[in-house]
Image (cartoon, rainbow, N blue to C red; front, side, top):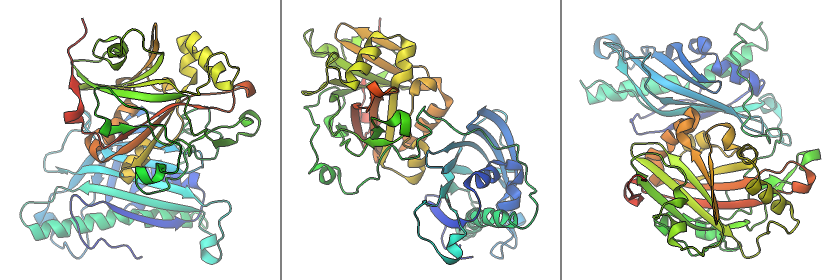
Length: 476
């Protein structure tokens, strides 16, 4: 069927796509039904649910079949069977597409079995992308309503006896894994003619990252390509002179003109518009501290950028990402009002939201503080794991607030969410290869609070966490 892996290497990432007829929802149900996996995945002997971490995350034990291809006629004599313990995470995007991701993990209820080699799944995943409503198709392609894509980066831990045998083993296993998309396609096609035979009860509730989940337009426009300098050359510059303990080579203020926010009529029509190119608060600098343990209210520390600026510093909006360890990291971003920024009393929608945020309760703040992430440069697996969906973080994890005479600090406790920790586990090991934008907003609900305006934004580029962090002692 046109699928063949001519070479195998443990550091190679394979990708394959195939158009499939049927609904995206039905295909998603099929992939999530682990009992049916042996029907459509030739590489799988069985899949067992070890634990449901939450409705969107599961730990699975996968036992792989022994390949029967002609390249390995003596497989049982030369190579031991393989299995894997993986965490599976899924989400549904606003455009109706589904993403299912897999990554090796450890679980006490999924120990290694004597005589069985534990394969290492660095990352894998399926995406189900519905056809565009305005797509022009004809003939056989008109039947296929979705594009199914599978990407895998896996080390099968081949046998040490022979390098040639390792290669043959890897080719057979990789071919079987890639052929799973054809197995899914065939099952979907059969259901057009035969009565359904797969369980329906394993479909999970639709993922809702934020109250904007009903909007079907992407929150971030497609990346226009080119270097950061080329992309921003003709765009209004948001740069300010940076400072802080993190070297300025690792961060900057991104161009936010491609960000989509809730428009002035969003309450009635759910239409988003492109953001004003200027954020309300401009980036001043970033502190990256290494700490003995997690600490809130980092802006109160004498080592912080805010305290080093002196007592007469203007008001700052501070956001700390508390990265669990060891080592524990504090990534703290400092923003100050821009030259033409709306004030708290100028009658603009943003000034109304800002006043309510500063004067309101922690519960009110949590319902408004929204983040849009975007992986500008990174692998497919990282991009699919992070996504670009607007998210009210406080609904998913602990988010305390601290106020001082000239600042407010939002502390995002990543350790309080297993999902956030899993996403971080995918990103941190490859941080030096990533360029990531983080955009902060205050969510508007009523007409007088719209359109939304970006509060502040930061771009992190190829950060070397080992050398970039500054160690500071625990607070007294």
